[in-house]
Length: 125
Image 1 (cartoon, rainbow, N blue to C red):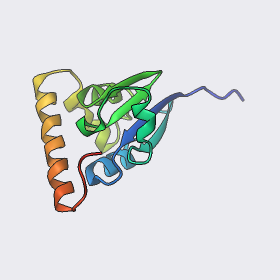
Image 2 (cartoon, one colour):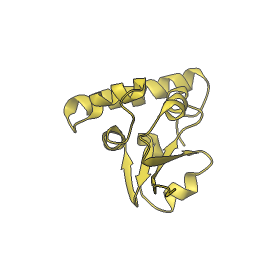
Image 3 (cartoon, one colour):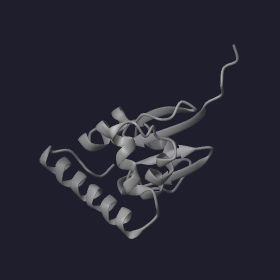
């Protein structure tokens, strides 16, 4: 039986952030993708050595040597997530590059900082 080659997607996220952790934990991709989830606090050098993106501006996705961040990462993942999951159904909010998705993502980033402050965790990595 021939095995189908899966496209690899790497998701760099903040393990200490409850939103990021749960998002990464429940993200289910379509069968033709292989998801590698990495805690950025442990793997910060792999990002710093390969891109000038700042993880403090949102999680980062790597696919085929291209890095995506923030709403761009969510737009990319929209095409890769299983639509029958809760997160897959919510991805339609980030389907297009528009002001709504940018505002919504900035609200999520701000909320992340507040939650990490309440949990006495550093929001800067």
